[in-house]
Length: 138
Length: 156
Image 1 (tube, each protein chain N blue to C red):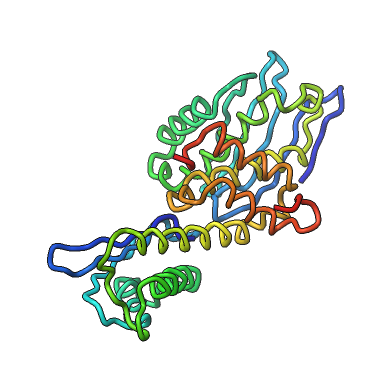
Image 2: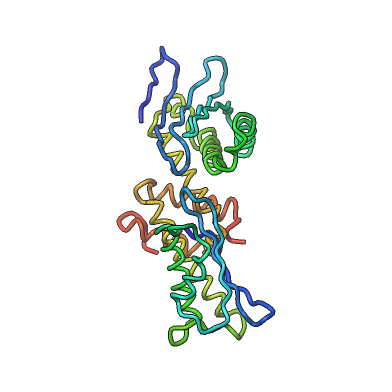
Protein backbone atom coordinates (compact mmCIF):
# COMPACT_ATOMS: atom_id res chain seq x y z
CA UNK A 1 0.00 0.00 0.00
CA UNK A 2 1.19 3.54 -0.78
CA UNK A 3 1.69 5.43 2.47
CA UNK A 4 3.03 8.69 1.06
CA UNK A 5 4.11 10.20 -2.25
CA UNK A 6 5.18 13.47 -3.78
CA UNK A 7 6.76 15.37 -6.61
CA UNK A 8 9.36 18.09 -6.12
CA UNK A 9 11.25 20.40 -8.42
CA UNK A 10 15.05 20.21 -8.37
CA UNK A 11 17.37 23.19 -8.92
CA UNK A 12 18.43 21.75 -12.25
CA UNK A 13 14.87 22.08 -13.61
CA UNK A 14 14.41 18.36 -13.27
CA UNK A 15 11.78 16.81 -11.02
CA UNK A 16 12.00 14.16 -8.34
CA UNK A 17 9.01 11.90 -7.95
CA UNK A 18 8.86 9.59 -4.95
CA UNK A 19 6.52 7.07 -3.46
CA UNK A 20 6.62 5.35 -0.07
CA UNK A 21 5.18 1.87 0.07
CA UNK A 22 4.54 -0.59 2.85
CA UNK A 23 4.23 -4.20 1.85
CA UNK A 24 3.88 -7.22 4.17
CA UNK A 25 7.18 -8.98 4.67
CA UNK A 26 9.26 -6.20 3.12
CA UNK A 27 8.80 -3.30 5.49
CA UNK A 28 8.56 0.33 4.42
CA UNK A 29 10.41 1.48 1.32
CA UNK A 30 10.81 4.77 -0.52
CA UNK A 31 11.26 4.68 -4.29
CA UNK A 32 12.49 7.72 -6.19
CA UNK A 33 13.07 8.74 -9.78
CA UNK A 34 14.50 11.91 -11.29
CA UNK A 35 12.61 13.07 -14.36
CA UNK A 36 13.61 15.70 -16.87
CA UNK A 37 10.50 15.52 -19.04
CA UNK A 38 9.60 13.37 -22.01
CA UNK A 39 9.67 10.04 -20.16
CA UNK A 40 6.95 7.49 -20.93
CA UNK A 41 5.01 5.93 -18.06
CA UNK A 42 6.85 2.63 -18.52
CA UNK A 43 10.21 4.43 -18.23
CA UNK A 44 9.14 6.13 -15.01
CA UNK A 45 8.00 2.84 -13.58
CA UNK A 46 11.29 1.23 -14.51
CA UNK A 47 13.24 4.07 -12.88
CA UNK A 48 11.23 3.78 -9.66
CA UNK A 49 11.76 0.01 -9.50
CA UNK A 50 15.38 -0.05 -10.66
CA UNK A 51 16.89 -0.46 -7.20
CA UNK A 52 14.76 -3.46 -6.37
CA UNK A 53 16.07 -6.79 -5.13
CA UNK A 54 17.00 -9.56 -7.52
CA UNK A 55 13.73 -10.97 -8.78
CA UNK A 56 11.93 -7.67 -8.22
CA UNK A 57 9.86 -6.21 -5.41
CA UNK A 58 6.90 -8.49 -6.08
CA UNK A 59 3.44 -7.86 -7.46
CA UNK A 60 1.90 -5.83 -4.59
CA UNK A 61 4.70 -3.24 -4.78
CA UNK A 62 4.70 -3.20 -8.58
CA UNK A 63 0.92 -2.71 -8.61
CA UNK A 64 1.24 0.19 -6.16
CA UNK A 65 3.92 1.83 -8.31
CA UNK A 66 1.79 1.27 -11.40
CA UNK A 67 -1.13 3.10 -9.76
CA UNK A 68 1.16 5.97 -8.75
CA UNK A 69 2.54 6.31 -12.29
CA UNK A 70 -0.96 6.17 -13.79
CA UNK A 71 -2.10 9.05 -11.57
CA UNK A 72 1.13 10.93 -12.31
CA UNK A 73 0.62 10.59 -16.04
CA UNK A 74 -3.07 11.51 -15.74
CA UNK A 75 -1.98 14.79 -14.14
CA UNK A 76 1.25 15.55 -15.97
CA UNK A 77 1.19 13.41 -19.11
CA UNK A 78 1.05 14.95 -22.56
CA UNK A 79 1.02 12.73 -25.63
CA UNK A 80 2.00 9.78 -23.48
CA UNK A 81 5.03 11.36 -21.89
CA UNK A 82 5.71 13.15 -18.62
CA UNK A 83 5.56 16.91 -18.97
CA UNK A 84 6.89 18.72 -15.89
CA UNK A 85 4.40 21.05 -14.20
CA UNK A 86 5.28 24.68 -14.82
CA UNK A 87 2.47 26.80 -13.42
CA UNK A 88 1.32 27.08 -9.85
CA UNK A 89 0.41 24.36 -7.38
CA UNK A 90 -3.01 23.52 -8.87
CA UNK A 91 -1.87 20.53 -10.89
CA UNK A 92 0.22 19.23 -8.02
CA UNK A 93 -2.73 19.52 -5.65
CA UNK A 94 -5.03 17.81 -8.12
CA UNK A 95 -2.50 15.00 -8.55
CA UNK A 96 -2.12 14.47 -4.79
CA UNK A 97 -5.89 14.59 -4.28
CA UNK A 98 -6.50 12.02 -6.97
CA UNK A 99 -3.72 9.77 -5.69
CA UNK A 100 -4.72 10.00 -2.01
CA UNK A 101 -8.36 9.24 -2.78
CA UNK A 102 -7.44 6.22 -4.86
CA UNK A 103 -5.11 4.98 -2.13
CA UNK A 104 -7.88 5.48 0.44
CA UNK A 105 -10.30 3.38 -1.61
CA UNK A 106 -7.63 0.72 -2.22
CA UNK A 107 -6.91 0.69 1.51
CA UNK A 108 -10.56 0.02 2.34
CA UNK A 109 -10.69 -2.75 -0.25
CA UNK A 110 -7.38 -4.31 0.77
CA UNK A 111 -8.37 -4.27 4.42
CA UNK A 112 -11.71 -5.91 3.51
CA UNK A 113 -13.38 -3.41 5.79
CA UNK A 114 -16.94 -4.44 4.93
CA UNK A 115 -16.21 -8.04 5.91
CA UNK A 116 -14.51 -7.16 9.16
CA UNK A 117 -16.51 -4.24 10.55
CA UNK A 118 -20.09 -3.10 10.47
CA UNK A 119 -20.75 0.26 8.79
CA UNK A 120 -21.41 1.82 12.20
CA UNK A 121 -18.12 0.52 13.60
CA UNK A 122 -16.15 1.72 10.58
CA UNK A 123 -17.84 5.12 10.69
CA UNK A 124 -17.01 5.45 14.40
CA UNK A 125 -13.34 4.81 13.62
CA UNK A 126 -13.39 7.55 10.98
CA UNK A 127 -14.99 9.92 13.49
CA UNK A 128 -12.38 9.01 16.10
CA UNK A 129 -9.58 9.83 13.68
CA UNK A 130 -11.01 12.97 12.11
CA UNK A 131 -13.12 14.46 14.89
CA UNK A 132 -11.80 13.19 18.21
CA UNK A 133 -8.16 13.05 17.14
CA UNK A 134 -8.16 15.25 14.06
CA UNK A 135 -4.70 14.51 12.71
CA UNK A 136 -6.15 13.82 9.28
CA UNK A 137 -8.13 16.98 8.82
CA UNK A 138 -5.27 19.30 9.74
CA UNK B 1 -11.15 -18.75 18.07
CA UNK B 2 -12.05 -20.27 21.40
CA UNK B 3 -13.46 -18.96 24.64
CA UNK B 4 -13.76 -20.19 28.19
CA UNK B 5 -15.79 -18.20 30.65
CA UNK B 6 -17.41 -20.43 33.27
CA UNK B 7 -17.61 -18.86 36.73
CA UNK B 8 -15.71 -21.72 38.32
CA UNK B 9 -12.78 -21.27 35.97
CA UNK B 10 -10.32 -18.53 35.21
CA UNK B 11 -12.12 -16.14 32.88
CA UNK B 12 -10.13 -16.02 29.71
CA UNK B 13 -10.53 -15.99 25.99
CA UNK B 14 -8.14 -16.68 23.16
CA UNK B 15 -8.13 -14.95 19.82
CA UNK B 16 -6.21 -17.13 17.37
CA UNK B 17 -5.03 -14.41 15.04
CA UNK B 18 -2.38 -16.52 13.22
CA UNK B 19 -1.31 -13.56 11.10
CA UNK B 20 2.28 -13.88 9.93
CA UNK B 21 2.26 -10.48 8.24
CA UNK B 22 1.67 -8.81 11.60
CA UNK B 23 3.72 -11.40 13.52
CA UNK B 24 1.15 -12.65 16.05
CA UNK B 25 0.00 -16.21 16.69
CA UNK B 26 -2.60 -15.55 19.36
CA UNK B 27 -3.75 -13.03 21.94
CA UNK B 28 -5.21 -14.21 25.21
CA UNK B 29 -7.13 -11.98 27.59
CA UNK B 30 -7.30 -13.25 31.17
CA UNK B 31 -9.25 -11.78 34.09
CA UNK B 32 -6.84 -11.45 36.99
CA UNK B 33 -7.87 -13.73 39.87
CA UNK B 34 -6.32 -11.30 42.35
CA UNK B 35 -7.37 -7.85 41.22
CA UNK B 36 -9.70 -5.74 39.13
CA UNK B 37 -7.43 -5.88 36.13
CA UNK B 38 -6.98 -8.10 33.10
CA UNK B 39 -3.85 -9.58 31.61
CA UNK B 40 -3.02 -9.58 27.90
CA UNK B 41 -0.96 -12.59 26.98
CA UNK B 42 0.42 -12.42 23.45
CA UNK B 43 2.38 -15.03 21.49
CA UNK B 44 4.45 -13.80 18.57
CA UNK B 45 5.65 -15.90 15.66
CA UNK B 46 9.22 -15.18 16.70
CA UNK B 47 8.59 -17.47 19.66
CA UNK B 48 8.41 -14.56 22.08
CA UNK B 49 5.53 -14.64 24.56
CA UNK B 50 4.71 -11.58 26.69
CA UNK B 51 2.11 -10.49 29.21
CA UNK B 52 1.01 -7.01 30.17
CA UNK B 53 -1.48 -5.92 32.85
CA UNK B 54 -4.52 -4.01 31.71
CA UNK B 55 -6.41 -1.68 34.05
CA UNK B 56 -9.63 0.25 33.39
CA UNK B 57 -8.78 3.58 31.77
CA UNK B 58 -5.32 2.47 30.61
CA UNK B 59 -4.10 4.38 27.58
CA UNK B 60 -2.81 2.89 24.38
CA UNK B 61 0.47 4.74 24.97
CA UNK B 62 1.00 3.21 28.42
CA UNK B 63 0.35 -0.30 27.12
CA UNK B 64 2.54 0.28 24.07
CA UNK B 65 5.44 1.62 26.13
CA UNK B 66 5.28 -1.35 28.47
CA UNK B 67 5.14 -3.86 25.63
CA UNK B 68 8.00 -2.16 23.77
CA UNK B 69 10.11 -2.19 26.93
CA UNK B 70 9.50 -5.89 27.36
CA UNK B 71 10.26 -6.69 23.73
CA UNK B 72 13.44 -4.60 23.98
CA UNK B 73 14.43 -6.49 27.13
CA UNK B 74 13.77 -10.01 25.92
CA UNK B 75 14.28 -9.70 22.13
CA UNK B 76 15.87 -6.38 21.26
CA UNK B 77 16.32 -7.36 17.61
CA UNK B 78 12.55 -7.74 17.20
CA UNK B 79 11.48 -4.25 18.33
CA UNK B 80 11.16 -2.80 14.80
CA UNK B 81 9.66 -5.98 13.39
CA UNK B 82 6.94 -6.10 16.05
CA UNK B 83 6.29 -2.37 16.23
CA UNK B 84 3.06 -2.42 14.24
CA UNK B 85 1.75 -5.45 16.15
CA UNK B 86 2.47 -3.69 19.45
CA UNK B 87 0.63 -0.57 18.32
CA UNK B 88 -2.48 -2.55 17.40
CA UNK B 89 -2.39 -4.64 20.59
CA UNK B 90 -2.13 -1.44 22.64
CA UNK B 91 -5.05 0.18 20.85
CA UNK B 92 -7.03 -3.05 21.22
CA UNK B 93 -6.30 -3.05 24.98
CA UNK B 94 -7.35 0.57 25.35
CA UNK B 95 -10.61 -0.19 23.54
CA UNK B 96 -11.27 -3.19 25.79
CA UNK B 97 -10.79 -0.99 28.87
CA UNK B 98 -12.79 1.96 27.56
CA UNK B 99 -16.27 2.93 28.71
CA UNK B 100 -17.65 1.74 25.37
CA UNK B 101 -17.23 -1.87 26.44
CA UNK B 102 -19.67 -2.74 29.21
CA UNK B 103 -18.23 -4.40 32.29
CA UNK B 104 -20.44 -7.46 31.96
CA UNK B 105 -19.35 -7.84 28.34
CA UNK B 106 -15.77 -7.74 29.47
CA UNK B 107 -16.29 -10.23 32.26
CA UNK B 108 -17.83 -12.61 29.78
CA UNK B 109 -15.10 -11.67 27.35
CA UNK B 110 -15.31 -13.90 24.39
CA UNK B 111 -13.16 -14.35 21.36
CA UNK B 112 -15.72 -12.67 19.10
CA UNK B 113 -15.56 -9.44 21.08
CA UNK B 114 -11.75 -9.61 21.05
CA UNK B 115 -11.80 -10.10 17.30
CA UNK B 116 -14.04 -7.04 16.90
CA UNK B 117 -11.77 -4.92 19.08
CA UNK B 118 -8.76 -6.15 17.11
CA UNK B 119 -10.37 -5.28 13.78
CA UNK B 120 -11.30 -1.81 15.03
CA UNK B 121 -7.76 -1.24 16.28
CA UNK B 122 -6.19 -2.54 13.05
CA UNK B 123 -8.45 -0.36 10.86
CA UNK B 124 -7.72 2.71 12.97
CA UNK B 125 -4.00 2.02 12.82
CA UNK B 126 -3.99 1.67 9.03
CA UNK B 127 -5.88 4.91 8.49
CA UNK B 128 -3.78 6.84 11.00
CA UNK B 129 -0.35 5.66 9.95
CA UNK B 130 -0.32 6.58 6.25
CA UNK B 131 0.31 10.32 5.70
CA UNK B 132 -1.21 10.21 2.24
CA UNK B 133 -4.58 9.24 3.71
CA UNK B 134 -4.59 12.43 5.79
CA UNK B 135 -5.15 14.36 2.58
CA UNK B 136 -8.60 12.85 2.14
CA UNK B 137 -11.32 15.15 3.50
CA UNK B 138 -13.67 13.69 6.13
CA UNK B 139 -16.77 14.06 3.93
CA UNK B 140 -15.01 12.23 1.09
CA UNK B 141 -13.77 9.51 3.46
CA UNK B 142 -17.36 8.88 4.63
CA UNK B 143 -18.56 8.81 1.02
CA UNK B 144 -15.87 6.27 0.04
CA UNK B 145 -16.69 4.16 3.09
CA UNK B 146 -20.37 4.13 2.15
CA UNK B 147 -19.47 2.65 -1.25
CA UNK B 148 -18.38 -0.51 0.58
CA UNK B 149 -21.73 -0.83 2.39
CA UNK B 150 -24.29 -0.34 -0.38
CA UNK B 151 -27.18 -1.84 1.58
CA UNK B 152 -26.44 -0.32 5.00
CA UNK B 153 -25.02 3.13 4.60
CA UNK B 154 -27.34 6.09 4.20
CA UNK B 155 -27.16 7.80 0.81
CA UNK B 156 -24.27 10.27 0.65
